[in-house]
Length: 384
Image (cartoon, rainbow, N blue to C red; front, top):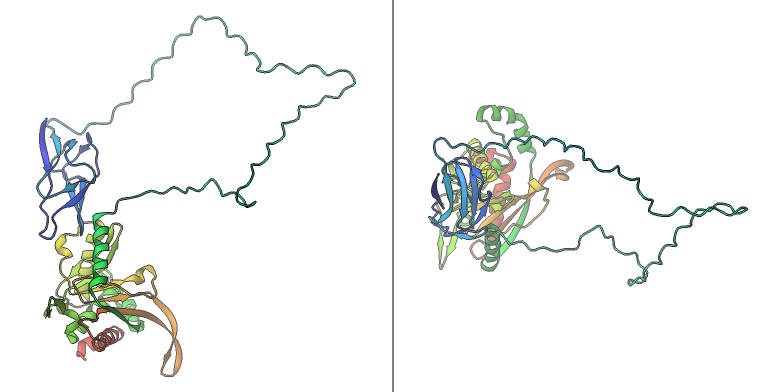
């Protein structure tokens, strides 16, 4: 068998190192392209597939060790042309029973306790009384019931992942850097729900994916960003950088942490193109195949806490952006419509913005523009 080293892959420019998590053990047989480890970086996890089929040798980097691009991770014993994956061992036949030994017959067991003496005449037979229970120990909690011994009060410490550490650092940096202020509004989702219910089957049949609620908000946000370009800008030192393009980051919760893949050039997209882009990045996030390039950049972020039932919240800016839109749950509430009380599906929305750059007037007008574009998509067609 030949031995070949397995090297770590090249990283993106914004990533210098990561921590390795082995998914196989030394001596395991692996197939070609089977994932044997993951390198967890600040932004994503990079799967490490086996380049060839073989048996894993010694690990050159321990579990949780730091990894840079191009270093040797482990060795793989490459089998020859006739080598195959080791088959399951055949269960050995059970040995024949030993011949009967010519020992003396086993005597009957001796009783552990002597039989009780016969009762004297005139006395009734009585069974021995059990010993009295021991007295309860003195209580040290003033007579209260002792806590149940079934629950565990142990503690354990788990090392934070690189992604979680990076998320914590970025969120705290956002609080320390930005002068964050949040403004709120509410959106009547009646028209969006009616449109979705009317066309969702035809939409899915034609495009191959579902029509959700994110595309109206992403399209409305792009429309509002064009109306208020200061929200799409960012402070860089003593200068303000205005971006002529609109790249919207969509926050996606994964088991390993929050990731924000970017949908680029949204200003030229319709609902179908936005839904396709969201579906693509969402699938990558769920399968752990997001690349660093999928999350770089972004000029504005949308976070949908409503999928978890959140009714109200104040999102934190995703640096180096200047604002973030928070969506929340759709809840039927009584509202006043032309002087009458009606039950409508309503959603609270929140816009957190950097008050160093964006004034309250621009922030409120921006959120009102999103409200009008979601409640009545005709606004997008007429550009009003």
